[in-house]
Every structure is written in structure tokens, then in C-alpha cells.
Amino acid sequence: MCVSRTAVPVLTMKICPVPPIGRRGAPQAGREEHSVRRCKADAEQTRLKILEAAEMLFAEHGIARTTLEQIARAAGVTRGAFYWHFKDKTAVLSALYERTTAPQLALIREASEQADLTDPLAFLECSGTRFLSVFAADKCQQRMHRIMSNAAMTEETAAWLAEANVELWRVFQRLLARAGEAGQLTDELTPDEVAG
Image 1 (spheres, rainbow, N blue to C red):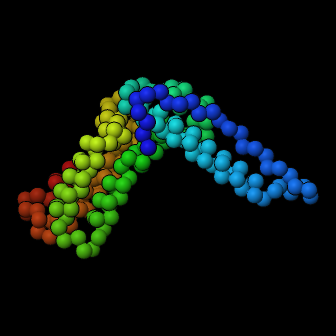
Image 2 (image 1 turned 60 degrees about the horizontal axis):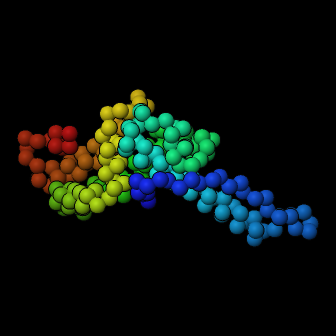
Image 3 (image 1 turned 90 degrees about the horizontal axis):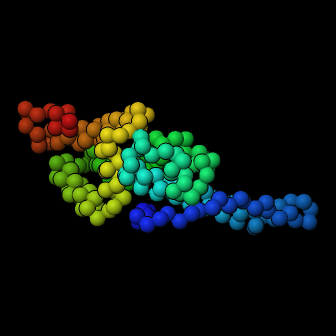
């Protein structure tokens, strides 16, 4: 879920109400359950607002030049609310990465582990084409690409990115090893060389 470049609406923190007490001093069951669901929904809304604000700011200014205060302000939450959901900017980056790249990565990872995949290169070509189609139409994907390729990262976020890239490289390496086993690569190329 992305927001447009228009202003992010301010989200106020709601305090979860104390459930009403019944005649014998026990909380009334139905109302307590409703309050808990409502509080979870409010917390998820706050988390999404933080992610949307961070995505916009990271894409515009870079990760290193974006402060937690700017993210909290743009999301309309306090820094305390930010820290309730995320430890630091790296945790936010990880959550953004998961929501935009997880479906594609999961598809490729699953294919790399399928025993009956007979044409790994055709699968990679099809997946690449599908990803580019999604990328062309999806502003979130485009912003995430800008964020991930921005050189202005902190040491911590750069280390996280290197780890995420290693995971992706391993998945491609497995698929290309399968292509080699199927005779789709020349003897002059190893899966490592093709994946790199």
C-alpha cells in the first residue's frame, strides 16, 4: 500500500480503553475482545504510516540523510511510537524490503527448490519479464529501487543491504546450477560466474 506524493494524513495515537467491569469485577468479555482488536488495528495503521513516510523520505533524501524525527513527523506519530514498532532505520528498511520484494523473491526461491523445474532459464526469463512489468507500473517498487541503489546509506543499512543481496545471489546461483545440470549453460561458464 503506497501513498501518493500528497501529504501523509496525521495519525493520532489512540489509547486503548480499559474494558468495562461487570457486576462481579471481571471485564465484560465481548467489549474487551473488541478493544484488543481495535488496538491491534490502530497499531498496524501506525506501523503502515511509519513505513509509508519512511519510504517517501528515503526515496527523496536517502537513508543516511533521513532522521527518525523526520519519519515520525511525516507519519504524524511520536518518536516513541516509532520505537514501539521499529528499532532503527535498518529495521524500517528491512520491513520496506519485505513488503516490496518478498513476493518476487519467494517465487524465485520456490522455483529454485522445485525438483520438476525442467527449464530454469525460461523460468528466469519469464520471472524477469513479469517483474519488469510490475516495476513499470508500481511506484512503490520504483521508490524501493531508488532507495536500495542510493549510495547514501549508513554503515548499518549498507551491511543489511549486503546481506540481502547475498540471499538473492544464492537463490540465483541455485537456479543457475539447475540450468547447468539441465545442460543450459556452456562448459565455459559456471553458475557462480553467471549469477555474479
